[in-house]
Structures are given as C-alpha cells and as structure tokens.
Image 1: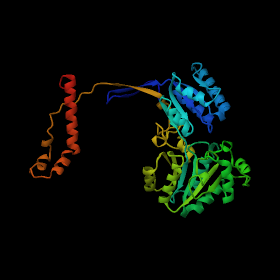
Image 2: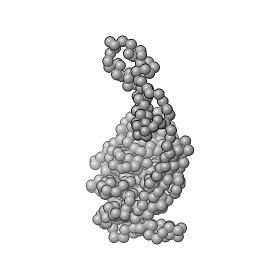
Image 3: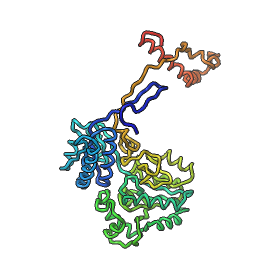
Length: 422
C-alpha cells in the first residue's frame, strides 16, 4: 500500500491522487486487547506519516504505556522523530476529553464501548470509532460439521476470546445439532448443565449487563474455579445452552472470554431471526459467522443481516481481522452507521490520509440539441391528442429521455460558463 506522494495515476480519466498525512491522531485504547490495539494503531499511523498519542483505559494503563514505549523506541531507531508516539500517563476521563479536543489533534481513532465512541464523535473532531461485536456463528445443515466445530472453537479460543470479531454464540439447526455437539466436544468444548449456566452467568456478566473485567481473556479453568464448578482438564471453551436473548439470559451478550452461548433452531429461517436478535443485543453492524455450503441461504443472510462482515466457513476471530479471508488486515473493525460509526470496513492506513486529487479538463463531446419529443418512439406516444395524460408523462420520463436531457443541460451550462462552445 503506497502512502507517500502520488499514489495513483489514471491516464484514461486524467486524474492523479496524492497522499498527505492527517496530522496528530488521538488513539483511544480499550481494556480488552490494549497491547495489540496500540501496536496496530501505531503502525497504521506511522505508515500514513502521522503522529499518535494514546489514551489508555484505566484498567490497562501499564501494559498500554509499555506497548507504546516499545513502539516509540522502534520507530525512533528506524528514523522517526522523537515524540512521534506518545501516551497519557495520568489517565482519567477528563484527560481523554482534553486529548480529543486538543487543537493540535487532527483526528480521533477510538476503540471502546458505545459511550466512548459517542464521546469521540461529539468532540468536534473528525473521528473513526469502532464498536463492540456480539458475533453469532450460524451452522446450517449443508455445512462440513467437523470443520465448523473446529473453526468455531479455534476462533473463540484465539487470545482467549478477546478479539471483538470472535464467536459469541452458536446457532445451529435441530437436524444437525447432535452431530455438531459431538464434534465441538471433540475439539474441547464443555457443555454446561442449567445449574452451571446460572453459576457461570453470575461470574462472567455484571448485574448491569457488561462483562466482568475479571474474566476477560481468561481460560475456562479460571472461570470454572470462580463459578465453583468442575470441568474436564482438556476443556478449551465453556458452552452454555440458552433459550432466549436479553437480560434474562446474560450469556446472550458479548463475552470477551472463553464462553459461548448455544441455540437450537428449527431451520435457517428461525436461525436468521435468532442471529438478528443476537446482533441487536449488542453487535449490530459488526460481524456474523456462517458455516454453510448453500449459496442461496448465504445470499439471504448477506442481504438481510445488519453486519458489515459476513464470514463464511472460517474462524470469525481470524476471518474478521483479515488473517483467513480477503478482508483488509486490521485490528480496528468499523461497524458503520448501524452502530453509530463513520466507517463500515476494516480500518487501514488509507483511512488516516488526506487524498489530494489533480484533475485535467476533459473535452465534452459536441452534440446537437435534443428534442425529447422527437426521440424514437415519441411520435407513437403522441399520435393522438386523446391519449391518456398519465401514460404520456410516464413515457416522457423514460431513462433514455432523461439521459439526453441531462446531457443537453450540462452542455448548455458549460457553454454559458465558458463563453464558448465546448
């Protein structure tokens, strides 16, 4: 990816594009994956020739500062100026607000909860905010069930579930549930009984609905001990069978740890609705994983689901960040206007550039004035004065007529402005 000087020349359109840095970026860092977010944001900022100042989450100050320090040392050693990467040491909401509103800050790159992203967009500065995910993994009957189980466990357990694109709940058709469960167990899933689901819910989720920071990124053994339950030693992920979505089922929300929800549905239509409910519960605009070999059903999901990444037959955590898919590699995933974000794709250095465009005059073809009533077919439309008036109006608004009229108007305006024939 070219980010310096002329980055594109279009000979046919006589157009150049030139990249310029936006300036100083305020990088807002979450508590869930602070070090990787610092590393990625620093890399894309420097790739676009910007400086960046980080504001850590209060629960992740030391590791955020250490990651920023390491990146700064590496950048300076490679020739970057001193101070090109900075980090707030005395963290508070007031300090974050001051950073976002500072006159020298040109753009905000915010990763965090909905309230923080909203604050970034309310700062008066250009902002790129990315929000939470509550990624469903729908397993349709045509899927390779062994591979689906392997990929779901792989995606959920990567970095102990802290990636925002990781699977949060499995939604599976009744006709394949038993076989899928057997495969999931083979790859290290432990299914909880109703009593254990209740105990795990109490330690994983807070009463207000958010995830308990104590369990973020923790392995199943830690969570089981906290919940007072016994699990097999080889357990890689806890799976909680659920019957609904919402406050009554706390584990239906985003769980940035090694716990999955599990839903049975009659068919893909019900699965489609259940996935929608899960997305509405906190992951709208983010991602949805799907395991299926039925292209028609995949198409229906793609057209109807409010997500910007539909990840097919791949681990969601790796697929969402572009490691196992053709998506742009990124640790900052836009959620679009569904989630109040200005970006719907994976954020890359291109989003941190001002693009100047150099455009040459193009000769407008000389055309004779067009009389819409003399176009082909218009004589038949106006043969009789008793013809229905509505029919005449509809035909006069055909795309062919509209296109000719627009071309003529443009030509006349250009002639008037230039004082000469184009």
